[in-house]
Length: 244
Image (cartoon, rainbow, N blue to C red; front, top):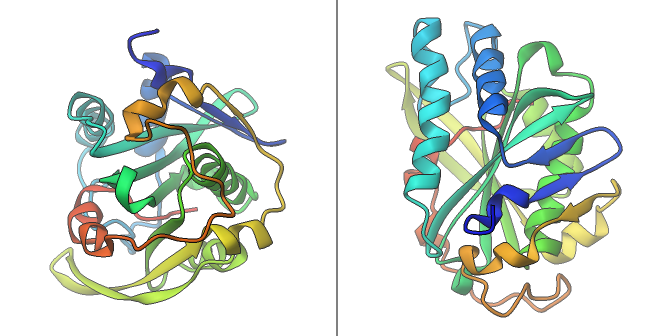
């Protein structure tokens, strides 16, 4: 689809593929969400989108992806990709940014279907997303927000070299929820880059990300970033937290 080159973006490791979802992929992703994403007693997501009857949960998945595409601008975007393993959609991985051309920083969110967790797929999905962010788009910083108690996602952040970047407090299910913020620079990513990832279809889509002249080298010295624009308040309320 030459008028929407995001459809051609993919990132592949030896175990998974991240790709822009087709309609069939979105249906499969919604089905995964309905099957379960986390234990009922613990809500890892600020938006609490997994609470509700199956039809409501499935509809939220579809609407989130459609809304991201409909509201996309080069200055304010969220790229939702599906995680595919052995031909099956098993979860979601996203990158989001505001004013990326200036800030060069992205927010990462993710989730996997409950029965696909604990198999190492979340690590491969995170590696592919980081390759896309740093090597594909020329990001200089990536960050993630993980609720305390979500030990699997906390471990994934540490494994990939993310460093603590403060805490965040939200109301979740009417209770106080404390989350840890993690940040990863391009330089630290290069030090922890172990999973080989192949990128496809990124260059034609760069203008949609606010990158008119192509990605900056991953080894470039970091420029000052507008961290306040991605403080976590806006994006955390709308985006998925990690659930790997």
